[in-house]
Structure formats: structure tokens, C-alpha cells
Length: 100
Image (cartoon, rainbow, N blue to C red; front, side, top):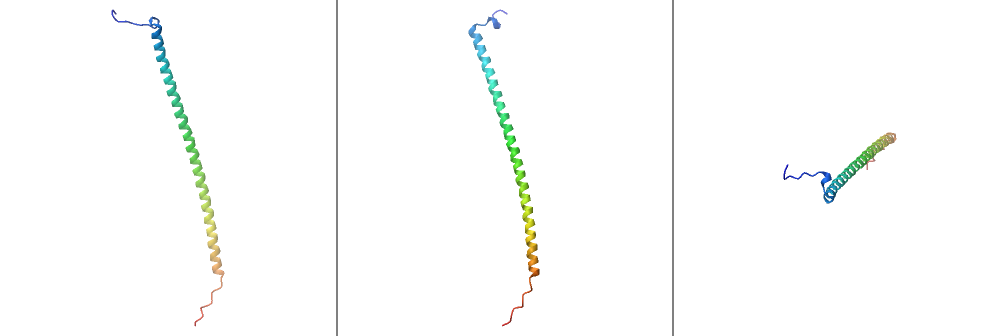
């Protein structure tokens, strides 16, 4: 092909080889930075997932504790209601009011 230059790696000058090496280094560095960013995103996502799971477990424990407390309160309320009814039933009737 007359007039068209074809370059092979061994035909490049040292300056051209350095430019090519610089571009390769820049591309590799960019790839490493992007992959490191990807690892950071994955790590952050995993950490957030773990925190949300822990939060859900804590909420479940809190709900169970509240249900236990509610049952205890309802049982105590029923006992107090029964005691009050028993006290009212055991009380002697009041005398009729005196007429003036």
C-alpha cells in the first residue's frame, strides 16, 4: 500500500512507545479505580443489608416484648376486675336512707 504508513510495535519510536504505555497505564488505573469503587459499593450494600436485618430483628424482639407486656396487663386487669366485683358482692347492703 503506497502512501499509507503501517506501524508495528518494534517500528515505533521510544516516545511513541511511552505514549502508548501511558495510555495503557491510565486505562488500567481507571479500571482498578472503578473496580475498587465497585467493591466499595458492594461492601456498603452488604453493610446496609446487615444493618437492616439487625433492625428488623430488633423490631421483632420489641414487638414480642410489647405483646408479652400487653398480656400481663390484661391478666392483671382481669384479676383486679374480679377482685372488685367480689368486694362489691361481699359488701353488706347499705341501710335505706332515713326520712326526715
